[in-house]
Length: 280
Picture (cartoon, rainbow, N blue to C red):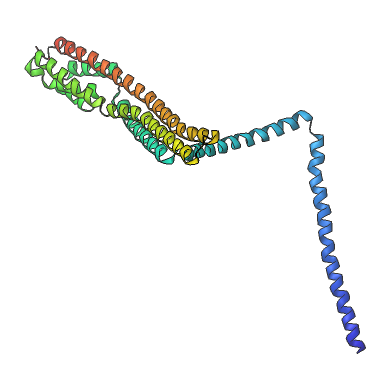
């Protein structure tokens, strides 16, 4: 019996001793952690006040930028939902299609633009050295409407200068049509976007008045909320039209510039062929 009691006492002392050491360890860790955490504070005390203000300003500016991006995105989503997603979605589709047409035209026009002066000089050198065939080969390997017009003019060189002029004028009209392809659709979406916005506004106003009739009284909150939601579609439609109008004006100016270069280059081609006795 004594052996059993003594064994239990020893086991109890052993267990409580281990628990004491286990619980005592975190206290030392916490003290060490506190001392370690207090070290940066001591180090910050050694930094000047100006440096501390700079660090705080940088941290705050980063937080403000992130918050601004999040708030702008969330506000845009909220306004889109508030402005009747059906009509806002239709206006968004019109904007996307219009932008796709604008991007396609801009890429096509940029690919159609070449260094006209350098090209004309190369054609003249080809006519002087290798004749019509070499000039036609140069035009065939050059992209753009000006090279195509030159090729058609050189192709009719054996028929006389009048045939060359008619060919250049006719094919110039064809190239002008290719440059302006799809521009009318862009103007359509420019007019369509605000009209769809106005349509959403009118329908939103009708729904607001129906709400007033259902309530049986004119509530400022109901009227103001309905008008705010209705006008959001108009704002979105106007913004879409403005964006498309900017691209449209750029495209029209680009087309006008290329057409002017085509006309000048056509006159230069006729003079060049008369100079080198290519056509009579």
